[in-house]
Image (cartoon, rainbow, N blue to C red):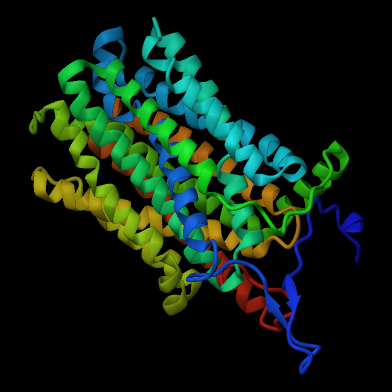
Length: 434
């Protein structure tokens, strides 16, 4: 069937190949990148830096919410909009940005997105009011929308299939490092000079990451430009949304992010208040637990190899649930251990689900990844807002309750995937969660 008849914007052959010796003219070799091969390290490091910049900017205000609440005289729920607006802007614009990447190229769109986002990041510290701050953060999130979907589409096209989960795991690991470093740095800088200087420092760091990313990322070799025609785009999106496997993966990503967004939006309020009373710098340092996410995301490929995708998702959900329960304790070490487990489970689940989307989509990969990212960040916005509201109404137990319901949703959907896989036992259709 031709690409036009399927509504595909981009078709990447299963095995991009180059000729091999005449002794075996029928044989081909995969010309895409692989671990240890030419360009793979540069590519991995470049996308790692892009992930660092993306998450550092996207969540630059999260660890500073108590200070923002104090300066502008607003409650936790209102201050949380500085996070929710950024993730919401990303969720709304990720699909249009993915369409631009189909036409103009992954590297071009990622470079432009980072350039705009870091420029806004240098303006954010001068916001005169909470309304202006929320508006700037929404623009910043919209600009960052060109990164996640384009990056995973780039990897799906330029990296061999067997290395795809590992490659995407490294990109997600960059996300975790960005989230960690942004929060730790802002915590200590804010303690000395205030939240505005802290957010400005993150902007400067992101500038360096953006420049290095553009210099290091290899030019795409397997990208084919697609059409920007709305009818073609709509057909591709419709095809992805009618695929039950992709729908399940989209919701799983969103539910994991509900947990993560809620917990890390509220944790600063809990740790600076009674009974812990920690200073802002120490609260920022709590985000060092993101290093656990870096490890769990980068090893997701091996986890899938041992347990399969469904098994890996069950393990990620169980780890997250255990962390939520531990975080209810009144002991600081147990709360920190709970955060470690929540972080490890979230990043492992996200890496597994996002890589499964890239493998499942046989055409319009940027749109498939964009839909995943859109629902994922909708989950972040919902988690940040609902988690803060639950904290205001019922304390930390309310936030944990919201997260627990989301984890139950992940388990239920994965069970549905298991049943669907058994129905498809003929092997005629590949299952994303197998």
